[in-house]
Image (cartoon, rainbow, N blue to C red):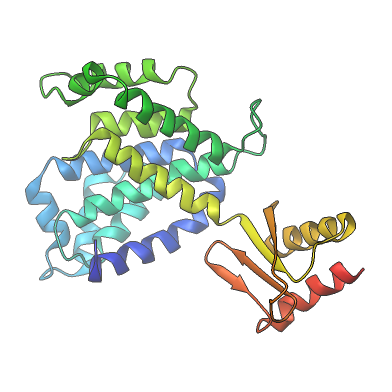
Length: 275
């Protein structure tokens, strides 16, 4: 996806962010359901991506089709996509898939408890998706069964469930979607896409901190507390020592980099490290 479609997806993801703290798997299921309807009708895809029709007209079509059948949030998200511009008719379906998967991933992210194995919800989801991919790769029979065009979606979902027993509800939903609606690609390739989305989201909460000299235990604790307060959540902090670093400290959290040029935010961290 590139150009105008990529811009539309970026905007949709930004708007979705406000809904994610309270998102549920039901919202994801509804978005996947809307995706199934869109994928099943070439005429509908053309109508929703026709550049000659206004965004308001296309949004109204979505509300007419799905209003009362899905939640207000799902209808709002889908109508927002319809009102955007798309370079190709398939792109709106790809966007719906990405948004639905992002909701699932956010639900895993929002889990406050760490699993018995010591992983966060996002880490657990990534591990389960990887385990499914490995299980498929290890069996030609499984690969053939998942690719069998005559097999029902329910049968493929049931088979997939046997490959990752005990998986979380989030993993089951993404894996079930991948095997039942692969949308022209292999299920494992779609799982790779979902896993990449999860990894990118988890990276947002990993802080890589570069400092000029090793930190004491007290300094490390203060740094952790300062970053947690700055971002409003518990971060995983990785510290690197770089004697050549200019400015004394550099912090990267996801795509955001804080260095000596961001004086107002780093000065507080320096004060906390200094005690």
